[in-house]
Image (cartoon, rainbow, N blue to C red):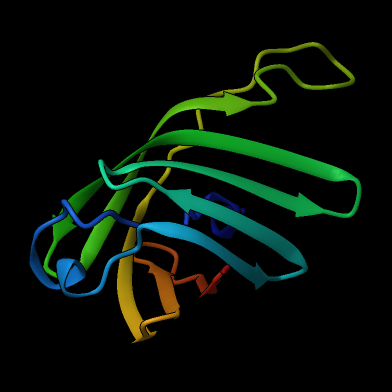
Length: 125
């Protein structure tokens, strides 16, 4: 499901509307029974885990400006890279383009531009 690929969030180096409030730091969000933990570095690098019950996925990469008020997650590394039961290789997650709306300094809403899934993230102290 595309909402699993949030991934999703940007750094202060990103220009435009997203730069006004920074995504640098640690964030946690929930959507459709999935817990998202996102860490964004000042240089735009990110890592994210997604948990549902005993299942977990991870992705790492960089966040890029994708248009006014939009960011793109460019996935460079992910786990699992092989399906646990079949051993078949997993394909690279697409990352996606997300509209960014800050609800305040400690809350941000990301909406998938293509599929319209929404995840609300809160800053983790």
